[in-house]
Length: 527
Image (cartoon, rainbow, N blue to C red; front, side, top):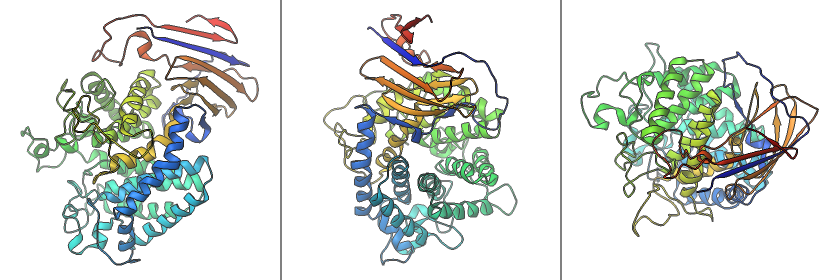
């Protein structure tokens, strides 16, 4: 197996500089926003365009066809009807597609899409109750209310109501819409909802303490904090994480994940967890949020915990594709090294969450090993979940199968994966580059043009020319706005040096030393 990576530089000025940043109130390594990076290849550019022209309109149509959007109109008394979709978390599918649509609007004007988004926001605003509560199945009520909702607000949140999960995705979508358009219509709905949560949940005696049944609100609250500056949202995110491991009605001695709480990662306090267990998407959303808190609040206990969890996942619980979650029972992690092929689950959403978590781990530590995992999961665990035409999907991604389960489907009763793909793929340009006080990082390879802003505020225009992933020849053209000294850090993928993943879980049968050749302005650079 010949593994070669060739990188050529054309740069006005390139020099290493050593500096440190002692500010620990945020990530030390910052991703370059997706709005500053534009793919120009036939791989990512075409896939993102397919999301724009096919997947997002198709997914919105499916949400109309399956009454997910009508639920908001009925809840807002804009039409007669009942709650008429399969699950209480169906609100979140609409939010996720809206988030993806907002990312698309941020990089390309689309008046029709913008107007459609406004119409959806109108429905969502109508469905929101006066105090900020937003959960269509309860607001509609009556005989059509989903049984998972419980008889009153938050009653079943610990289990399956998904009240907080829904609004977490709403917060992400609202922030994306505000940043893309400057309009506050959706953001104000999110703020009203988040203020209700701040008044309802917390350590105070009169408030509710609950570990959210499906993690996501923690991520949404962090994003809302970033755009509003309201620290209550950040504190509440941490509170929800720290609420885990305290529920005294679980049977801690049981081997059943539903009886002992491990399905919900509620079996131990988060800082005491060192093995990835339970529902894989819930878990990795939680790990991503823990990493946010580690960075934004300098919580070393959180940092230590996610480090141990990452070691466990990458060393014992990840497929060769970068996918996670080996068992259909609970869509969950299996035991250590329990990684069967034919019965693998490998949910598309779990691979997306794995990418989100590993980006955060890189931003926390600056180590290329996290991008190695991210890249493997991205190309093999995520993209397998969507067809090239953009309108057929895999929910699980098994590694071997017969004729059953070998074809993608247009939609599912539980369509978390199609809607997640609609929001995630437009964000991929934001995974390519990063900056820190040390310089500029090239994390992923793919032909693109980018405007990178260094820590000192100076701009560098970057052009990446390559046919990656089809071959490893890469040309970088760097044009600083003024002559600058800055370091450029190039990720040398582990697979080049016969390390498929940054652990001993998988190895190549041959251990050829890969060839890495770098030239700068035509002159060889000795590694």
